[in-house]
Length: 423
Image (cartoon, rainbow, N blue to C red):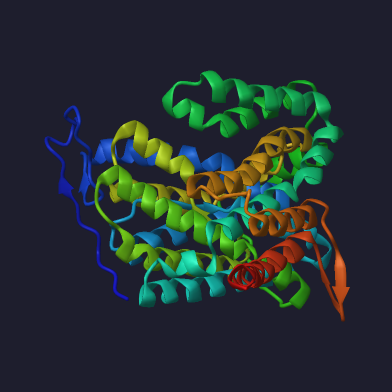
């Protein structure tokens, strides 16, 4: 696997894009315009990338650092052909929240394990092709795991909402309003706009925690991110590993989306994309950040601007790395109150669940098929109800049981159904 120093040719006159034209990944506009578009990508990823460490208690600046480093690695390993930003994955919220009592070191061990497995999946895809994913993880399985991860989080969202219902209600209302009537890029930034509005409203009515405001006042403007090391707890690792399925679906989906927008096949770099995200997540687990994934928010920016230049993503990566060295910025993010988190996550967690439904829709999964229907039904209830059982000294929650159940039960049930049809 090789990488290369990025080079871009100037698109047209570098100032404007002709009607019907696009700026390809290996092209760029003038550097001032490229920096401006790169900053749009930073804004697009902010709401989501910063919300994950805020909810899970991970250091914001450390997560930003590994997000920026991971993006640079992704651009290098995909040879500058796949414009993408690697931000915090919402899929990690559920296992990290569920394992909070095990401590941050054990949580980081789970993140690291996900990264290593994702690297392995990437190398398999490189060796045998992306079609292997359809065999091992057909859409009915992938959709179920993604859905149960999102829906498992529902009690956490409602719990935060109930702590400050007025602030949460304002945040939720703004998110919905901006999503529905916000033009173009603004509509894609609804989570960020809603969270900022909720924060301002909370500040006006005295809803910000005094201790967090004091920490913001005392924080330095410049300093190193807070690094932590991992430890390995089997129960936490098994709880976190189903996230691999989500990361695979998101990465492959991103590659296919970019290919559709640019009109160029990118199947040959799908494996590299998975390896790159795996390395970024592994590094985050080693150093104290949250796991990463490709971002649909940035696809929205590209669709709006028609600029697919990877140069803009290098700008975004550099900006994230620079911000990671400001403890003041991290302390500011941690002043976000429970009500804002509750209002935002009420939408976000539902979106994760519905992403699984979308996977089923896009693949035309047939739920009149009794195998699909019964196996998915059992997996979803295990995840949503957070079925928790102990095996030996290892305690596993609903995400693990639901994911393991469908990964094991689906191929067995499918074989039995095929055997029954022949007899």
